[in-house]
Image (cartoon, rainbow, N blue to C red; front, side, top):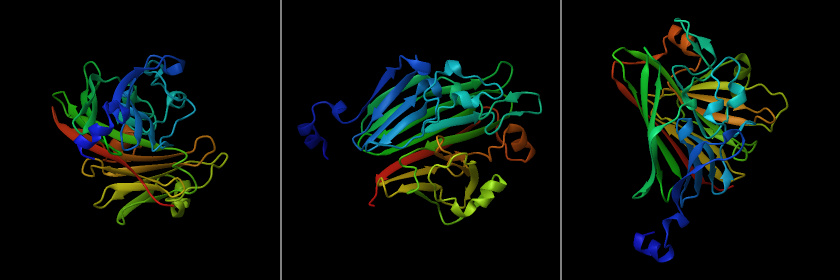
Length: 330
């Protein structure tokens, strides 16, 4: 629709798209702020500056897309990066970023440093925030820093670009090592899909050329059903598959029953592995599609197996991840 025609129908843009910042005022999430984004293309999502500018709830055309754990939204003040606590505060959400020092299981590095499950990044607050409409796009962004006195200092400049009339979300990160020493890093974009887009009616579509590595013997047993899903099953064990694409970096979750396709694409040169978390357990029913720098086995093991990436002094790397939604026919 041309702008002139649009203005004949609409006197205020916020009638159909926009971004606003709110603060929650009850429960365990009391005090956290969020940017609520809506588009004329049917997207509604929460972006959380107090949680590394990750994405919480996301809906498309009124249909829930994201997965929410039993915990729900949680204040970063409750974040406890100590052994055994991850399951008490993990909120799920459309995007939970893992890193920057470690992703995967709890581990103790060679220098004796403890790294909690999936690292500390999600518990960090962003600064230099922006949330506004800029021409044809909604822009939300800021900077997240992960640091320690006398050691590492990472800056992540994060930017979302969301077309006002569209149904896609482009995330761009610039990660910089702000020290005079090389710095090893890990990063995992833990994108979580829940019911109703995830159901026994859904399936995955991958590029034709890829390598798949199951994480466990049980995942290997389930390899023939990697791209399909069952109904929720009581006590079901999770399965994880590591996918390495040869040239095209995309995966689609298609559900003809709800008439929606969700596509994830990413920068293959900087995120060479897509982890797939398939959990059909009753009450914890979720699919994770997770572009990553590594096999998410934890910092110590990734280094030992030669997969830990490194940033040179004051060097930077760029990651991009795109979510795109569309209607399909049954």
